[in-house]
Amino acid sequence: MGDQAVEIFSNMQGLFAVPVMTLNFTDAVHEMNENLVSDIVKETERDPKGIVNSNFGGWHSKFFLEEDYESFNSLRNLVKGCANNYCDQFGWESGLECDGLWANINGPGDCNFPHQHNLSSLSAIYYPIGWIDGKETFYNYHDGSIELEPHACNGSDGGSISFFDPAHGKKVHLNPVRDEWHTVSSMHTYPTASLLILFPTYLIHSVNPFKEPDRKRISISFQFNYGPNRNSDSEESTE
Image (tube, rainbow, N blue to C red; front, top):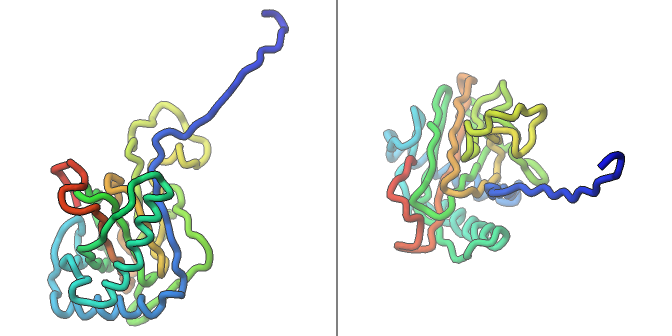
């Protein structure tokens, strides 16, 4: 071919992406957030032991808190539309319903082991506050969109939620030189008041512990389904 120029047609595609959506309601739902925190405190007094699922330490409420507290019912009504908008944007069938809401409180040293929610159609987590430090509640509202960051944490703070690449451990033959969506094996974010995260049920996630001696993290989790017998055909869930 000598010095003859060669015309090359190149195309780059990101295949098999995992659709994760973050929605930030800012301080527009502050009253609902206050009511959620108040009702969670009431529930800890009514059921101080809670239950154990993925949590190591901490407190995990019973399910279906929307049946006992109007604040949880308000949250359910709010996020239902968001879940179906997620479906519309990413090409899934809409018509999802939401129930079975539960609350989580993690104190210093508490964590949630890596797990997934196989038996539902879509998973979500909501933060009514940033954190509680001693007796002070921090509503760390943020204006604008919130993005997940590379890796499982920022290397110094606790309390992050981490999402793991389904191909984690398989990308071992190329050496990454910068953090990109396709070079890292995990992504994370920290609790921000009014932040909602929607993600596929198969996506493995965990919660890192706080190191601060008086800090507590509060979150609310829930799942979406199309209805009886219309969800994942998996018989296994590691929730």
